[in-house]
Image (tube, rainbow over all chains, first blue to last red; front, side):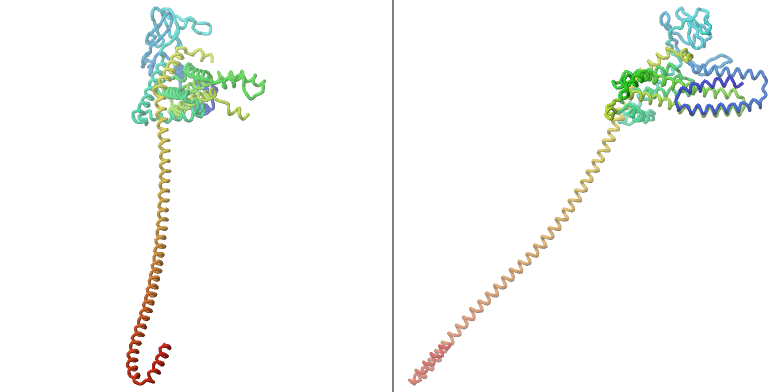
Length: 386
Length: 166
């Protein structure tokens, strides 16, 4: 009975293993959770003598929760807030689908009817299967290979998906917030006013505690704009991910890839001679070491942003998985003890997630600053005492 | 990992990069620049104000020191003036005394001199009167005596003797 669920939960520790120490805390609490759950469940299943039919229904529920979590983690073509399974009504709104296939095709995602119908656009037919759009014939037939992957062609997909939409809204919010703060400085003679003022100390913190110590007084101004933007972007998206809107932007690998790619590009495009010298011809070590170090250092150039990408993705996904699993558990246990315990756990984990949302934004910013610092570091003083 | 690659949405990546870069450019221009400028300005202002306050404090201290110094000087000056005055007074008194003494001495000397002169005059007068008186007496005596011839000569002789003694 518990096994299905257990398997799902083990996904989170795997992701966590990829990340740094700060996730250790959650890992630990999850382990504790699991033990606690096993104990409670054991007790519950002894106490309850459920009929077999109900047990199967429970299994269905768990499978459904699992599917829901999987569905939540992925992007979607419409913004669904609630859905009624029995009447099959989805509360939310549809978003535009933009495809490039024999020309530009733009239509509303409502045409898919949540994957149930074939959408027709400009004489072509498209079908939604496992959250991906495939080109099909009028009947919507999908051909599968032996691995059960559809062999139909995938059109180039530039749809305004739920994540893109959320990003746009949050970006707009960030822009309005900070531009209004900027304006209030002018109006109030150098003193910020309004809600933006709450973020002023954070802006200063990023400047004084992240940018200046890591990059240095001389070069930090060049990177400060990016660091501030990326911090608030990640933080706000993380926080919005914790709201019942159910968006998962920063837990999406494409998003974290985009962000870390920008960090990668900025680092390597603004790097000075010293940075490259330290990669290809490490000063101050013997000749054979130089040869050994060069490929390692070169690999490091790519591993650093890769780690950034995976860290953010894994932390946020894992958080969402754990949180949704615990919320799902409330419905799985139909007892006051199990459900209230799950509720308390879900509550505790969501508090931790609020911290993680900030922490991950901080770490991403901090490490980006560190990499920029490597890129512009000047080693004159270091060589002086060699 | 395979699942991750399979799930990777190229469209989302493109949109994400676009939105982020756009947001970065807009925020840099409309938010970070003015915010950081304002904050820098404010920090500069605070720094300047603190420096000015420190300056003012120092100036104040200087002024106070000056005041004290001036006061001290004034006090010293007063002391010297008083001292000088006292000295002056003493010298004046001394001088006056001396002058008075000189004057008095002179007066005394003059008095003495005049007394002496008077005395001499008086003596002279007395002598004159005495001589006149003597002459008158002598005249009478002589008139008397001259009637007797021997006596005349003796008398003259005696008179001459007497006058020599004087």
